[in-house]
Image (cartoon, rainbow, N blue to C red; front, top):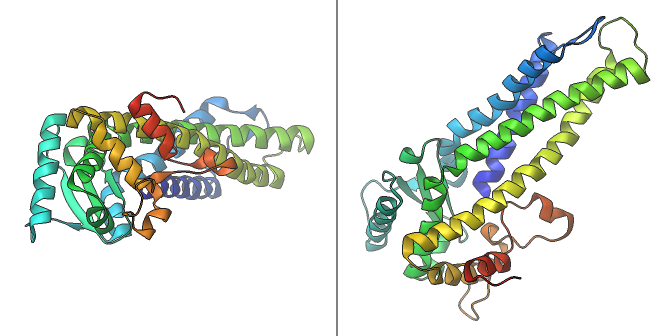
Length: 292
């Protein structure tokens, strides 16, 4: 979850900064006395919309390492690290991708995979995951992350984010034009303060709606990655056990820190719209073929 939230936040921040900067330079003004220039606005929206998403993707690996303090395993220092490297290598071969970097970081039970290219990705697991789960369960989680890489999920997420960003930028300016020209009746003069304020407010509001769309797509990715883990391991049982462990369903053995585990989802109400992961029960039901 952390890598997706970081990706979305970085991308939106870059998009907003770029949009404001270009507007201040006059590049983003697509309104004249003749009206709204749709062609120029669409080009501007595409540039701003995809720049943030692509930039976030390209820096995803170093940002993930920096934000988690992950240490890439160059030379194993323990039997656990040796097993970890061997397991990731075996799963990567089954998935038909090159061996990703493998890292460990201190923290609550969690894991993530990221990277701009599937053959130069990063897979990282937390110390809490290694300590709180069996090897079979850890292997299932690793299979889940390898499936993300093999599916090209980060690239697809980037394209989705770029598309919704483009619509955010475009529609915000269309609404700004309507407010400025129709409601405030600015006449033939250039865009006024009403246009600028409306665009900024709409970019924030539409950005929130865009995040809901991206979050929905992310939840579908998780179902596919769960299924991918089952395929790589030849059975869905290990992933079901791993999910049950992550969700706190295994009595007595789960560390207290599992309660705050990001990967477990479990959001309800309005917050569920922004959740990047489905509830554990739904993921287990999807793997076992049982309707929740």
